[in-house]
Image 1 (spheres, rainbow, N blue to C red):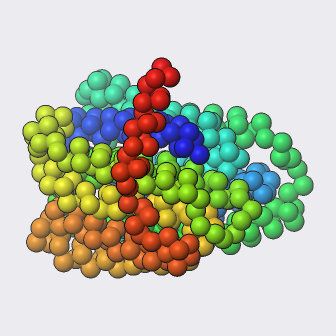
Image 2 (tube, rainbow, N blue to C red):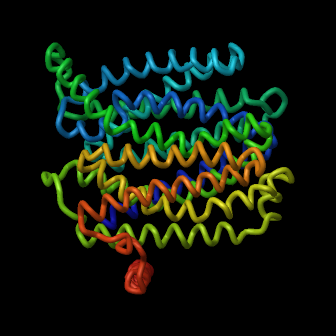
Length: 426
């Protein structure tokens, strides 16, 4: 398991570095206001993709080993188109951003949805190598296309560069993602009643599995809209840089959680504690997250301004206030993947409801007087509340106390031995 975690981590590290490149390019060339505009567009797309998961999402991974891929693909695609068009209409009514923005929102959200559906099915069939390659190709194309556009200058120093780079970044990997799917043995005939039955099953699993993702997204990104309303667009850009840098570290626990989730959905067991090896991997993920967060917040504000521009110095206090929440979320990701892998979606949903309640209250109270610092503190409070709820239920379900996730000296020695063995092998 640890080797697979390392492979996933390596891919996610590459993805995080390229994502950092996207953040840097948009901040450096477009400034705080331009970075804020990109952040709001990305958030709108992500919100639409969340509702797509009500007939897909992680449930595609869960059902891919059990059902015909094409019976899963068709209803997921159809639902994605409906949601993207309806969601674009909702954004038009709520924010009235203009026809050009709405056109790009509809088309790019559909493109991203199709890519997400395909890669979920690839991962569900345990083609982790293909999944990792597609993921890093997508973000690599986005970063490379943006660099070329910004270097061209002129009219490309605008949001247009981000729109057209996104078409390239999602369109090409979408076409490539059909290669591993077409190599699967699933027959592409006899759709009829089997297709309808699979669609109903997908909808049943998705409602429970994905509701917590919708709530989690609100916990992660609702503060952007509060800041845009109570402060201004450049502040959204500054907040987004701090959030992006801290959340990049989550590639460590996400790698462990993803492997654990895939193993659990392929397991025949329906209950029981995590193996000792899995708990050790979880502790190492927490240890790695804490170390990375510590290094990040140790950077002085001058480093941020030299990298992103003079406007982004205030991102450092945001990162400091987000730091405790980032470590807490490392625990939450591992625990929530356990309940998702056991199809115990209700617990994850309730934890997300707890977090959302704290988010709404804290954003309303803290952002008007404290701005982006209030947004960061609200996020940390929300992460703490939802994680505490999950740990309580994890203890009841497995008997493992919250201290089971705290790294020990033995874990540090084990990690050091692994590093020494790897260096000696080279």
